[in-house]
Length: 192
Image (cartoon, rainbow, N blue to C red):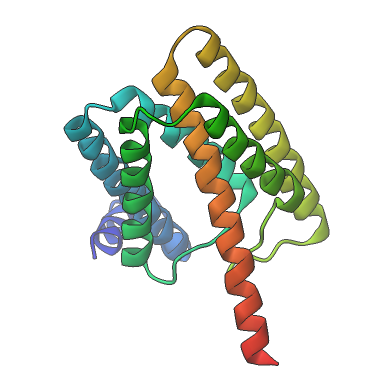
């Protein structure tokens, strides 16, 4: 595993202490996975000729998802393919020119209600205490607000692709929240 080899190299060079090995190995692994995800998505964006929309989508989705929570795949490979499929769906939706603005806004409003009502959506692997829950909720609402204002400005400036990228980013966060709600409920029912 590359992250283990890099961490061991850092230890031999005395850049980090042996006691910090697990933390650095995990951090390097996450950094590499994020780089692979981003590279893959941007490659798709180039193929679809949707780089601006994809960049806006990635920024909006990642910034909001960080605090909003939602579904997390059980495996790294599962996460990779879900992330790639979400980005691919976003690009296909942007390519469809027939979706009226009113329909886009209605779906966005429904997504926004889900986000505002249910953030942060905890995952079984990431439980939050009361203070963390309040902090994450506030940060998610602030992030959503800034992105909603940015989305409106993009529309006003006629940057339609960027507007749509942010809009779809919000929809994907809301879907992730709903999927986690359904998934966690099904796990609870199985446990009863």
